[in-house]
Amino acid sequence: MAKPYLTLRDQMSPAAQAQAEAKARAVLDADVHRFLAAHPDIALVLDEMAAPLHACFGQHTAVLEVLTDGEEGDFLSLLVHMPHATAQGAAAALTRFDEAWWVHHCHRTGGLLVVDFQLEGPHV
Image (cartoon, rainbow, N blue to C red):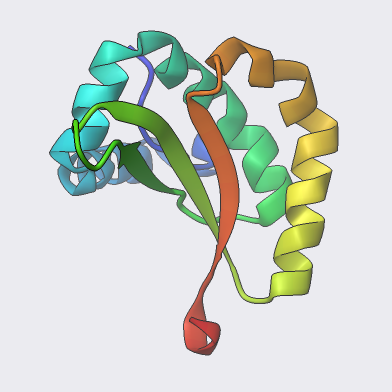
């Protein structure tokens, strides 16, 4: 099964990988788990997109959030927030990611996966 989080595993020691995996599993909320269980192909795309995301955004942990229909509670999509310090830098990173990887793979998600940035630090 694909891991439901994004990190640069190839730059981590095996012990650090195991620790990061345990931490990531603990912090994912129940909606993310249910979404990925209902859409296993999305979990595969998440796993494949980790390296391209980090190549464009730097080594940050993505924040996963499920968007739902407020009235029905139905899953609409999974939002992947990539942290970044500045709006200009984040927009440039998102453009690089879109052009290098996302445009070639977004069709695989059926519109269920959205990638965006989230400003971190004092800008928020």
